[in-house]
Image (cartoon, rainbow, N blue to C red; front, side, top):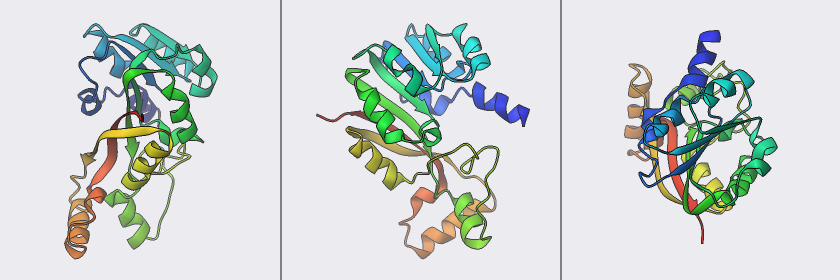
Length: 216
């Protein structure tokens, strides 16, 4: 369990790094962990901020980033400058929030005029999850993954799009990431799609990555 926690706080997420516009000069990462993700932006001359509730991880991140606020997003929101960040990043964070749509609304005022909100959100319709739910009749919370015991909310591609719209954002890009390579779940996803004429392609992906701007 301790090893999984270390990995969680240390993940560098190269799949999400490529979504940050090259023009971004000031970024904010919500739930920055030990700062490994945002520290990659420091090397490009970006002014990187972070918010992290875990004190030990935040102290580690502070050694790598421009500024790290210790606490939850709700606690630290008023300490963030308005109309400031070119990119706000939420890597697997929104599912841990009780009212993620409200937090997204509150973050709009912290984005610059052309700023983007970038998020990675678990897909509850992922093949592995569906297999256990539909065939094994099981919905068991785990230490990590889609059914992480610390998740308050669950999303599909459709509900991710809806949440952004209701929160005042226009999605520029949404794509499935971390496709299943399992010798069990990939065939399961393929069979489902053959049966439903390939209208269920979303079940191949563990997460959805989204880039959004403030709606006019």
